[in-house]
Length: 366
Ligand SMILES: Cc1ncc(COP(=O)(O)O)c(C=O)c1O
Image (cartoon, rainbow, N blue to C red; front, side, top):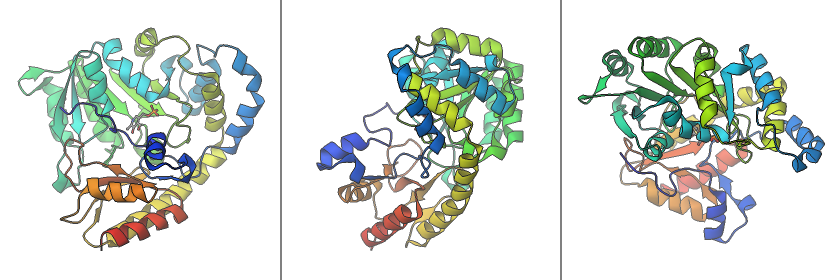
């Protein structure tokens, strides 16, 4: 299992700006996949109107935000816990649920393995195949869940990134329901990270999470709601599971501006619809343009990023460095376990930004 390395995540505009001696605002960040339309306009108003709250502790219960999320999803607020980004919840899950050995489906987000390591547990890897465009090996996973054994030893659960980063693949609700059923029978945990599922709502299993024991669904306010700097995420599960998660969280981990902004964002259905319409259009246009670059393979995606395989004899590491010098940050995925040295992930940004990246990339690949 690869260790968490510096640079294991995208979005470090500050580090890049220091290295390039440039202002962070001059950089175009395709390495973190954030809604290119930005946060809801209601967020700015809500933050301005809440300035006076800065001199108080934040609400440790995140009461207003949990009420809003509960009515959005038509569930009980006691089935929701809010964290300092979904990263904080990923971090506490192994300890809260007593997970010592977790099966991770690669290639995927590195924090699941990171959290297991920090908790003194072990992450085991099962790999999706390139020839299947990295589709989740659902039958193999169901078999593991049904037996409770992987590689000759028992496991405590499986984590699915859904849709998966960086591949963009997503399962159907029926497939995840099969896994959830097996998890329940075996008493194993099924963790479903839906940080990007706002972009494929028809594939989300969140509406079932509150009634599926042994399943935890994670959501983030970072990507679709474009609030990465405020650090807000949440988990949905049965009340008993949520209670265990809350016991592991430090007090006041979610700051007041994060709570206020997330509340305003969740309540803006107009901006959400506009964001979804934009992404449905631009993602396909961008992917098609990428696929026209000689030798490039642009994978299908359910999220707001595209996994691209560069032409033979090109290296993701070199192309990432060359683009970086031009102020364009992309995610080099060559060190992601299960991917090859030609793999990069590109966020879908605005039409203008995407066209600039395509132009620059096509010149580099000549
Ligand atoms: C798949 C996935 N899950 C979770 C996270 C964590 O997001 P946050 O802590 O900002 O909610 C990320 C961040 O990159 C991610 O890519």
